[in-house]
Length: 383
Ligand code: SF4
Image (cartoon, rainbow, N blue to C red; front, side, top):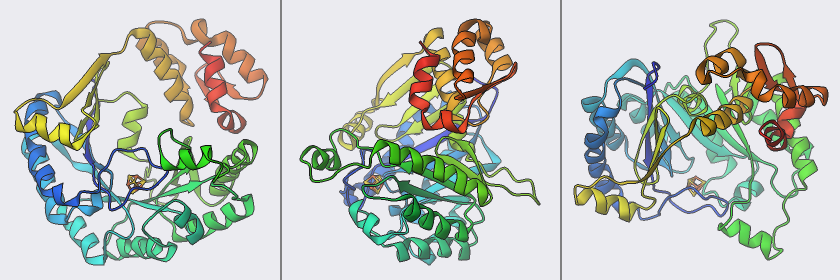
């Protein structure tokens, strides 16, 4: 167990429709929501000994906003009945536009949600249609405004860029609309072609031509440049928090930072993952298997592995470099009882000479250019 409070993740595996690029697990059988919500406490009972204190609860999916506020409240009550959760816990709900109205957002807030992550994805209707989203740009922006009207003061927006045919000018125009809304947090993901998705098939059949890698790289750099010029600070390769000069608020996602910093987290629901010390566990991947296991009184756990010291070192480098704070070499050396520079000093010097990382005695982090080529940099680092 780490000294830091853990995170609790609830995977809500329902979506109104499947987006053709998405490989997250979800089903469209919304009539099963009730049974799923009723089954969750059984899994929580099985895992209650694993967490001594949590300071985040994250409803992810899928589309958690398909659950009524009454159900969200019920799940939160079940969490509080079994786990110690700090009073100031960050309680995030992922919301997809087109699934909620103003009154729902009011009710989510009353139910105990204090942070929203809205899947806006784009402010361009053509892109939203290509992505197979159920909402229009107007609906997405209206959802954001409703969230503000409902009193949410911590709202993140998810965006997807590097879609086929997208130009830097068009992407900057989208970002300009988004920063005008002044969300506290932005997650900007490049569109990736995930194997087994309809999008991957369209690419294979030649019906869709992915954006050229160099243009996608330019858009990545443009994202960081644009957002940093408009009051956002990048803290992870795809994540930005609004800089709050007056109140010194930290608007980074407390929950997601646990994933990148090896803090324990406990996942509930089909396909949810958990980390406890060096042990990772994951649940069976489908709703059917999950419900069957719980009905039999069995754990829905499908597998587990305990990372070796070497695997932990590799992950610490990979996850450290994803974050703009980089790797704290002193912390690294004390955690693994091995000097960082003895292990990686040679590669770090080579990458620093190429302008891909900044390496000081205490910190090793990617430069902006290094971020653009992160996968190759990490590969060289770990050679
Ligand atoms: S709404 Fe989100 S989770 Fe559901 S299919 Fe679309 S991208 Fe995937």
